[in-house]
Amino acid sequence: MIRSMEEFTSAFHAARCVSTPLVAVRTADPASTAHFIIETLKQGRELPPLLGWDVVRGLYAIGRDSGEELARMLGERQAATIGPVDALFLAQQLGEDGLLLYSNAHRFWNDPGVMQGIWDLRDSFKTTGRMLVLLAAPGATLPQELGQDVLLLDEPLPSTTHLEQIVRETFNAAKLDAPERSVIDKAVDALVGLVAFPAEQALAISLVKRQLDTEDLWERKRQIIEQTPGLSVWRGGETFEDIGGVENVKSFLRAVLRGVDPPRVVVFIDEIEKAFAGTGTDLSGVKTEMTGTILTYMQDREADGAVFIGPPGAAKSAAAKATGGTAGIPTIAFDLPAMESSLVGASTERLRTALQIIDAVSQGRMLFIATCNSIASLPPELRRRFTLGTFFFDLPSDEERETIWGIYLKKYNVSGELPNDEGWTGAEIKECCRKAHRLGITLMQASRYIVPVSRSAAEQIKALRQMASGKFISASTPGVYQYQETSPASRTTRHAGSGWAAHRHATLESRGLNTPCQTMPGSQVDLPQRILTQGSWQARVPY
Figure 1 (cartoon, rainbow, N blue to C red):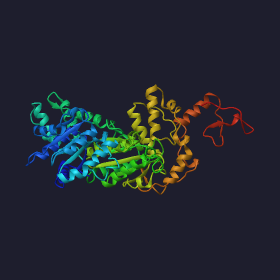
Figure 2: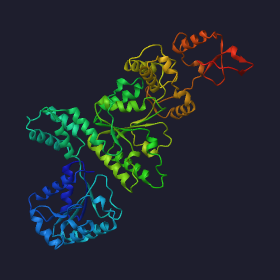
Figure 3: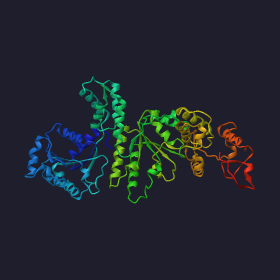
């Protein structure tokens, strides 16, 4: 893959030297690419005949020297009346070593007439040193009929050196003093991954009161990235300090962030098993092709990745998003279904565009983190690409819940007696605190509106634990996760006087029902013995 403008220039020069007749350039800025090609052809030699075509202007000359060539080819026809097929037919008359820039080619090359017109130029252009340059959007896919005959080049996004030049030129155009090195570095860091023109515009708008507003520049960059279908930038500022428990995975990710060639972007894929559902079985083949594209991308770039698996609410997504905040790098949410399109080939084009942006923003150093509630349906070849391992997030332990309560009690500024939180996830603790804060009620009252996932999906969680035992890394403690089922009698419970027990005792006391209790078989609710009659239920006490 071409990673710099120097490599792109070298590849284009090589194509000209060997008289490559058909070249497709995928670019996010066709005007800039056309200008670059023209400047490249000017170096040290006489400019060959240069023509361009687009759907509005028709056939037009590039530079004054090509005017006569255009007039000769048009004859009595008007330039603006030349359509996409006519332009290719007239190109047969282009002078030796001439070049035709064909704009937005991806919008036309699936048309049978255009496809044939392109192919018809191959042999005649080859023998006379002429070249047809098809300017296309990033990620565009050539028709199968042309795939073997057209050289495909991807123009890279601006390098840091080019962006530094843009920063200096923008400051100069605004008649500001030359920026200091620290200002240049911050600006370039915020502009990496953008095309030259929007980078210039974002930078110019962010010059406020003769100074650069870096945060505004970052926000404009986020907005530009989010114009790509399937990409969004996480704006939360959470760090690992805002997450209780899961110390093992946090320690591991800190080491990754401090290691050699640390990532510059976190790519977050939520519920990856749903995103890739249908791979290998969808009749259209779209999902299978998209999966293959991602597999190839991750392998070619040796991208690091980790999979987080566990029950809902166990801090998988929170830990993934906090990784970027901890390192001070952007977290880009990668939504594969949002990239899918009803148009043939459009889904893969969108995916390639998204991957190109990620590659540019990260400068080739990205960390993929995927969350998963069920790993069984995930293609094995995709799991292998996540080379950093699979971490299992279990329900938090007593100590972890204690830490989580401390975080959210402080965040929502609530206090009071804590409810019985046996089997609660961090998400449920957070929701209890949020409800108490928002509704102006106690934590005990808020807990009545929460059904822990450990109760509503007990069998699924047990199966997930058994599946993960001995196979995945524990997110909470060092080493491989091991599941040991405990009996109800051995579980840690709150003593009398603690939240849930005290509330239950007071309720029974107020109703004169503080008699010894018996538990209904298979039930989580304790009821007084005296409302039992001959083993059948005759009444229920609403707690």
